[in-house]
Length: 139
Image 1: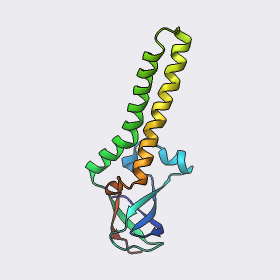
Image 2 (image 1 turned 45 degrees about the vertical axis):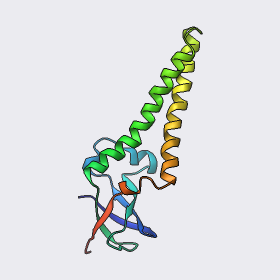
Image 3 (image 1 turned 120 degrees about the vertical axis):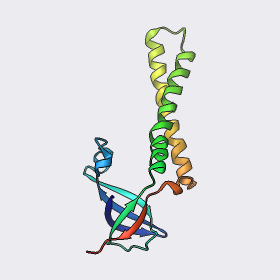
Image 4 (image 1 turned 180 degrees about the horizontal axis):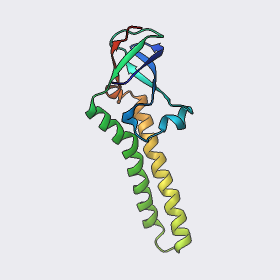
């Protein structure tokens, strides 16, 4: 079960710093974002934890799969869709131009997918996918 330390409180949510867990495998996304093995998560503060508390976290496995699809799947679909549209748009322009247009439209599609996720996050459509604090650990 993952655990971490509450860094700050934001209303009904806690910002929790956790160390990369076994379930992360070889992902290393935390290394890229934060430059360390620590990862910062926004969690539902169901136990009313306070700043500095060590807490246990839980995330429904089904929710984890949905969140993974959203985070990786939507930009991938945008990338592939953009490449396909670029291929259709640049059919008769020659190989060099066709490849360049496919790359550019693929990148536009991927950025569009990321923007879609960003906009929905701002509308709080993914709040039900957040991990939640199950218990405050005794020090």
